[in-house]
Image (cartoon, rainbow, N blue to C red; front, side, top):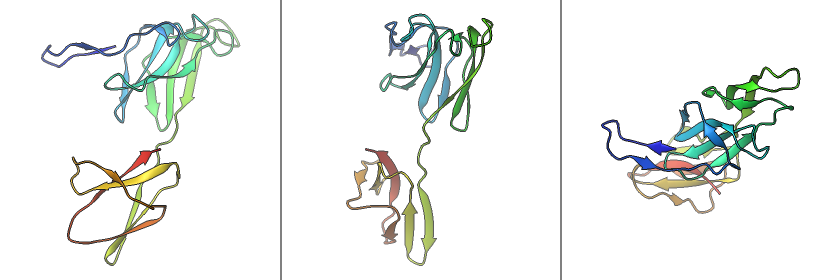
Length: 171
């Protein structure tokens, strides 16, 4: 995989497939929430069926989401993935349990936890449902975030003169 600036400068090759993690990317990439999703028509743990994967925009965090198996659900995904909710949808060009003509597949993605805010009087209550995430804050949206010590959901922040920005960070 590579990236290049829209003016043609800054070409960077940021990920090379090794075969076990996929081979022969054919379709375009899908961008959602700062993550690229794609497929390869070959490679993977079944050697030839292809994979669905995700990777960060800088090439880090490459993860195989699914290894396609010719007989079980089809193989050789060639379509660009469609993201709807927390599902990726695509098609395979061959295989599948009913025939060798391919099919449609869906891959469930983990849900990103939501940080909820509720203002009352001179405080804000922050809540989230996934305890594996930590609450972080900063006074500058582009600044360095620090974990709020002892914060569990729901967390109450008393409003003072300084503005704060909050986010959840996976542990």
